[in-house]
Length: 304
Image (cartoon, rainbow, N blue to C red):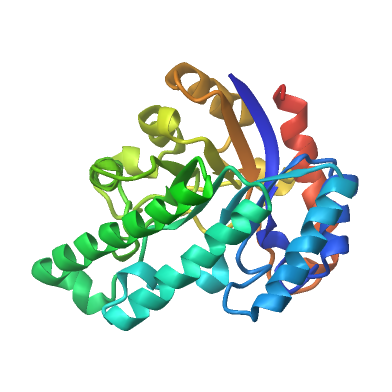
């Protein structure tokens, strides 16, 4: 088993949008070799010629700066209902959108594509009948995408357990149930992109807000791990700087040990820094320095 340190491109959104710039930051400034590219950097609703241009750029610069894109994922601007939307026509649009994302993922030679599972509206979530219907549609829609992804050569798909019922997978029990249901009769396997800072803070079960309990339950189904420093109230995408490490609960060696003790079948676990930064000073001007400190913190404590 190996642990491979990488990064999600959320830090770059609207800040480092030039392909050469964010590629250089990742490969040269941070020295990272593994990237999870979010759709915020290249939205599938753009015209085909623009998508094609940027795919070529990304392939050029990832080779120049020596990193691999091991996963594509939805991001902040695509945190929407998508495959769980109550309007069937909008569901169909998102099926088409994800098929384009599959094509781009294959063109970038990624291992997988992923997303949050789908988000219910408030009214759908409050109605047990509507919720069950929407959940069933959500799974069926993912199977349509999985069938397409299989024909294109992707190895697997991933979904990310979230923190509230509307966004699905908010507790360990709910994640186990949805993971079993989506994998039943699926054309491709579904794995998890597990976030150490997610979980329902209102759950009566303390395990549901404990990163290590999540890892014990799902390490063997989670090739992708989203990393950020976490507190009891799970208040944000904190970096791994001294300020936040002093009060945070995420300890690299404990994360690695927990995965190692509970993962038997996954060869490579990608530990992906998923950090976002508010558009405020001095935060905005210190993004690269903060990223360097976070990468250094992890590199000091794990062996890749």
